[in-house]
Image (cartoon, rainbow, N blue to C red):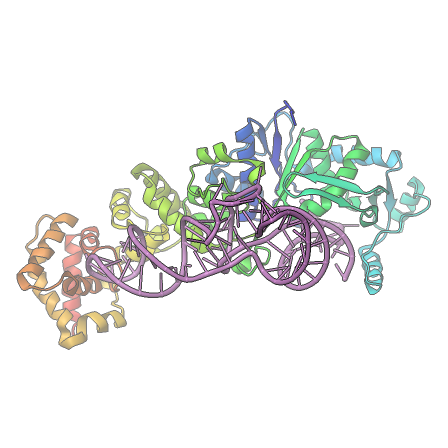
Length: 490
RNA sequence: GGCCCCAUCGUCUAGAGGCCUAGGACACCGGCUUUUCACGCCGGCAACGCGGGUUCGAAUCCCGCUGGGGUCACCA
C-alpha cells in the first residue's frame, strides 16, 4: 500500500464513566501509530446515549489521557478543523445523512415499541434463531409517520441492509466475511432523534477523514454494518485494525469485579503513568525479541500494526506492580518528586489528609526506596502524621517485640534511650552510626535494638529503616515516644 | 443457540519449516543479603490443547475435534 496521505486515526469514547485500561490501550495504540507515521490522532466524544452519559465524564477521560501522556492533535478540548468533536453537537450531520438514505430508499421508518420488539425477539429465540427485522414490502411514508406520532408510537429509522455478503479486510484479524443473512435492518435513528452508534460513528469518521479505524475486537462483528453504511452514503471505507481484548484473570471481559480497572484508580494508588503505559502496551502487542521495558519515545519508534497479536490477554496486576516497582526505582529525583506531588494531589489516605510538607517530601522518598507504589509510603509512614499522645501501640507488636522474654524489648529501650538523648546531630547517618556503635559496645545485633525502637515510635513492626524512621520523626518526637512507651509499661 | 475470532509455561509473550534439548518477563519455589516490610542478588520449577495430514523435517502449513472469547440492543 503506497498511500501517501497521512494517517488519521481516532479514539472515540462515550462519556459513560472513567477511562479504563482497555480504553486506554486503544487510545495508546492509536496515538502510537499516529506518532510513528506522522499522522493525526483525533479524540471524539460519542455522547449520543442521553441516558447513559455521565456529566463530567468527558473531562475525566481527557484528564486521564493527559496523565498517561497520550496527546491528541484534534478533538475535544483542543479543537481542530473538523469540529465540533462531541456528537451531540453534530446532530444536523446525522439527520441529513438519514434524509439522504431515506430519499434513496436505503432506509425506512419503523414504529414498533420496545415491548413489541422484545416479543418478536422472544418468538425468534423460541425457534432458536436471532431476530431479523421483517422489512416491509412497502416503506412507510410521511403520512404513516404522522399517524404513528399521533398514536403515540415511537418513530425510528432503519437501514436496509445489503443483500450481498460483506467482507472486512482487517489488518490484525485478517479477512472476515459476513453473509448477507447475518445482516439485519438495524436502527440508525432512535426515537429520541439521536443517531445510533453505527450511524454517528460512520458519518463522523467520514467527515473527519479518518482513514484507519483501530478499536477493540468487540466491534469486529459490527464492521460489516459500518461498511454497508459507508457504501450507501458514498463514503470511503477506512482501513480497519481490531485489537484483541483485555480480560480479567478469570478470563472474562474486564470489569470492576476484578478490582479497580480505571486509569484514575491506578493514579490514586500510586502508580507511575509511564509504568502503566508500558505495561498495557504489552497487552496484545510486542516489539519482539523479548523486549519489554520501553520509554514512550521507544514505543513510538517500535510500534507497528504488524506486531499486534490476535489473542486476548489477561490483565495481570502482579506484573503491572513489578513494572511500577522498577519504574519507581529507575525514575530520577526530579521525576520522582513530580510524580509524588501529583499523587499527593489525587490520593486519599492518612498522608494526604494530613498534608505532607514540601520540605519533608524528598526525605520521605529517600527513606522509601524499594517501594512498589506511592501507596506504600502511606502504609509505612503513617506514624509521622499521628500526634505523639494519640499513637497507640499494636498489642501484637508489643507482645512480640517489647514484653517478650521478660520485657527484653523494654529493657533495650531503656538502655538505648540515653544514647539517643546524647545525640545532637539528628540525621539518618548520625543515628545509624550511633545505633551501630551502641550495638557493637553491647555485642548485640542491630535487630535487637531496631525492633523495640520501631514499635515504640511507630506502634508497628513495619516502617522504613530504623535510622530513617527516627530521622523522619524528628529528635523530640522520637524521644518523647520512647519515654511514653516506657512509661506505659505495666 | 446462530455467526465471527482465537489457541506456546499459572500470566504477558518471543518464535514467521530445520537456529527450539522452545527464549525473556511476572508470579511461584529454594537460597543469599538483611534492622522490620519491601527492595536487591543467585538458582529452580514450568508451555507448543488433542487427533489427523503435508514435508526428509512442524510450535510454525492444512483439516477435524476440543477449549476459550466476542457478538447477536432505540449501548457504545
